[in-house]
Length: 222
Ligand SMILES: Nc1ncnc2c1ncn2[C@@H]1O[C@H](COP(=O)(O)OP(=O)(O)OP(=O)(O)O)[C@@H](O)[C@H]1O
Image (cartoon, rainbow, N blue to C red; front, side, top):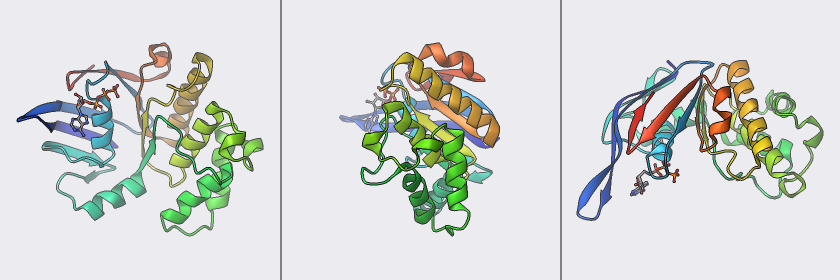
């Protein structure tokens, strides 16, 4: 399993007591497997992604990413695991306003400290994979909402992660464009052998995923 959460409990302070955001959660995603997590607002979906992204440390349980145990790892070790093994796509496209689509990707290679040798060809390959080969010199304001989300997805894959975590990527898009984004994620999951977790409210796109899990009051069920 590329991503494995075992018996994960996450609590937040809630007034004088604690509330349980993740309640003994089990999640296992294999390479090339596209998993969707659905559930009502406040049920814990974003918390699940934050724990899987190594951004939040659970109260107990184990989080394994690409064979490495995250729980108990130092902040530096978690940052390294995140940079090397995890791609994250947020709900809103958070692209840099002044950069072209191509440069949005190249800046990821710079930040990771990897040599830029090979980065340009990886960036072009990804822009082609997301259908933006003729948009590579456009800045965010010259792209549609769907195109910006495609750049976001391509950028998340720049450093060849094994795990892809995607939080409601279609919420700002109409149904057709949203379905195209989920179809693209399905294609990339298979092509790049990613362990992908998609949080979504868009039930119409669930036919494109391999596994659907439901989150209810912090409990994850199949
Ligand atoms: N940093 C925090 N501090 C305290 N409580 C939090 C924090 N983050 C989330 N919560 C609480 O944890 C519960 C789960 O929240 P979470 O955002 O994970 O749910 P969600 O299913 O992603 O919701 P949505 O679909 O609205 O994004 C909610 O009750 C929320 O209020």
